Length: 136
Image (tube, rainbow, N blue to C red; front, side, top):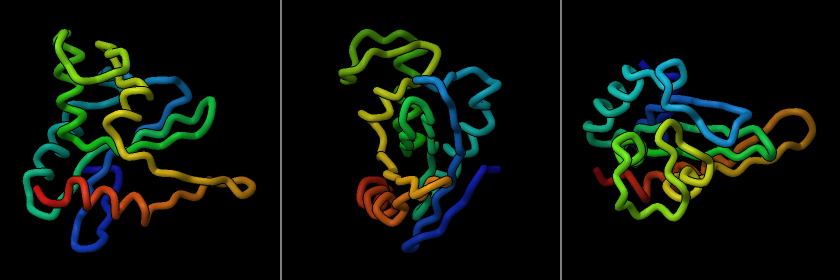
C-alpha cells in the first residue's frame, strides 16, 4: 500500500516517496495516484501512525521534505479549487506542489553527500515529526 513504512519510537510512518528534477511535483495521476492519497489518509486515522509524502527535489540542490497527508490535502484543495483566501506566503499552483510550499508546510529532512551517495539525518526528522504530528 505504501512505498515505505518505518517504525520509530512507537510510531509507524507510512510514506510515499516522490522525486523530481523540477521545482514542483505535479498532482497529475501519473505522479501522485489517488489510491496513494486514499491509503495515506486511511492509515493516518490510526493512533500512532504518521502518514505523508517524502518529496525529493534533486535540482538545483538536493532538498527533501516530509509533507503530512493532512497538510497535503489542505494545500491540494486550496490549489485545485482556486480558493483565494489562504495562509501561504508562496504562490499557489493549481496543478502541482512547488518547493516553496513544501518549505512552508513540510519538515525538511537534511542530508549531506560525502562523496557519491546522499545520507540523511532521519533521527532529527523522526523527532520533529513525532513532536508535530504524533498526537493525533
